[in-house]
Length: 289
View 1 (cartoon, rainbow, N blue to C red):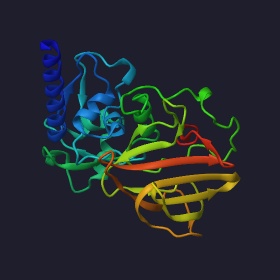
View 2 (view 1 turned 90 degrees about the horizontal axis):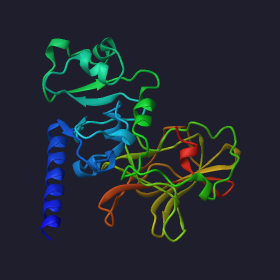
View 3 (view 1 turned 135 degrees about the horizontal axis):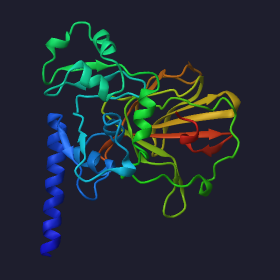
View 4 (view 1 turned 180 degrees about the vertical axis):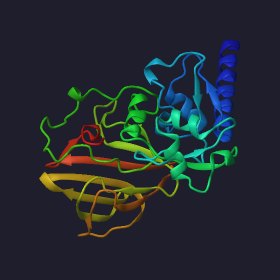
């Protein structure tokens, strides 16, 4: 009981430290047993955001004593940039550019009203990314599951082996998200679609050009949008709060479809996202970049 009590106190202390680091935008020190998933959960920030603010961190090789930058709730890290970054003590355009693998001249150009000598702690600036920088930042974090675990093996999932050539490198349906449930079978063998957690007010966007074939409510799924794409592909966006398209609407990649709703069951803003080819489920990770 004493050991359990000590462990609980240590866990509570780690959670407080991570949450405080997120509030202040400071650094956290990796402890034994930490993963990017547990650190993100303690701080209450999306895992993808933590990964992208630490592009040099490999979730498979975290070392005890390693320092990680904990993003604040005000910061954002959309896939294609620019990032919204909060200036820390000692920051310069050069040090920020080095961290995100871009150039100081690009930072200055993206923030024309802020000279390098005028950076202030707590100030928000834009950080444009070099070509491919966002992809490298995301890939460096390894798996995007909430616990840092690997997704289910593809061989065990009922995924069609052949996909059309058009189903390549589609953008994700949300700018800022973390995967709280990967596509795959649950403990009872039931196939579950991908579930993405995001922030209040987030908008789900079309992942490819197509036509809205359904925009309305479904039992237990709240508001739902179904888009049909070329080559018999479909994308599904469920658990929405407010629809932004109607049946028959034509959409392009990145067009807003719906506002993500709040789930009282998870106490999060979650988007249920599904891809299908000819009516058969497809692992989104095979298609999304």
